[in-house]
Length: 220
Image (tube, rainbow, N blue to C red; front, side, top):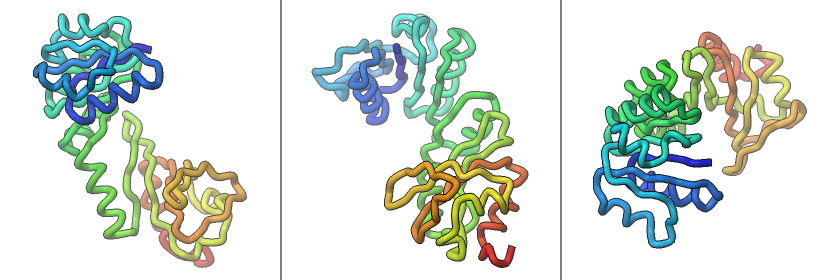
């Protein structure tokens, strides 16, 4: 498929090269022509110097045939504006914007623009290591009603099957991180010490899920 990327910083350049390596065609937009040097001499895609939300620039980059658009420049406003133009004007199906301000990121998620909040992701990961309790949001749907969260579990859950979590809560276990690798569990998968548990739940149920998993299952 054809992918348009706005922003040729470290993230944009890496994304462009990775997508091209997977067989996709890629066009990269940046206001600074010097930024395209990050792509290296082996990059075969298109480079367009210009503003990423300018329609002429987007058309030159092939947005009309694009199946995906990523706005990863260093400006929140530019990223979200470009993402909205790609989706609303050109009907690009898969759109994502990188947003530095986590408050803005949540607002734009509710407008239906998937966002990656760099600062929020980093602080979530640090907080999880500093304060391993409750939950840390990893994703939410555009309406804000369904969330994917990494949830702290009491040590009493170790040795119990995944099915016990789903029996005792209104949550579904999406996956487990075990020894640094993702694992999609079966209902009889046994929880181990060190497992990071990621659940899908309704936002309104998350506090109850946290409370249940934060104490020994024998007390529930």
